[in-house]
Image 1: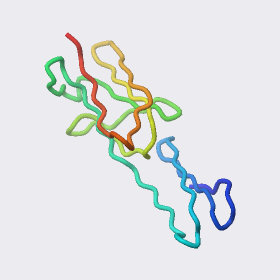
Image 2: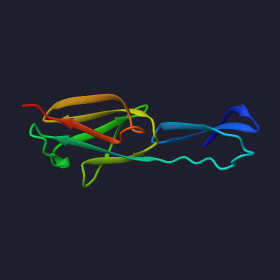
Image 3: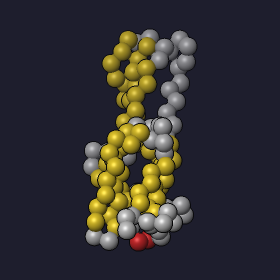
Length: 116
């Protein structure tokens, strides 16, 4: 966490997590605690019939300054990230598919689907 610009009574504070960043500006007189919260992102790859594929059959990544692997979970791949817009990518069967500017504050479920 680092203090950014702002007046001493209303500073801007920034926190970084997995290279993602989030900022808050608030009046210290009203609240001296800066509350940052991550969001659980779940990424799934579905087959052409809409059935989930085994996470062991593909690789999932997100981009925040560099491509980083998501953790394999029971529902697909997952990570705790700061609310922001990220790019997500899936490598499956020698191919790569990518979704850009996914705002996880609005929707933290990222779904890819194979074609026929």
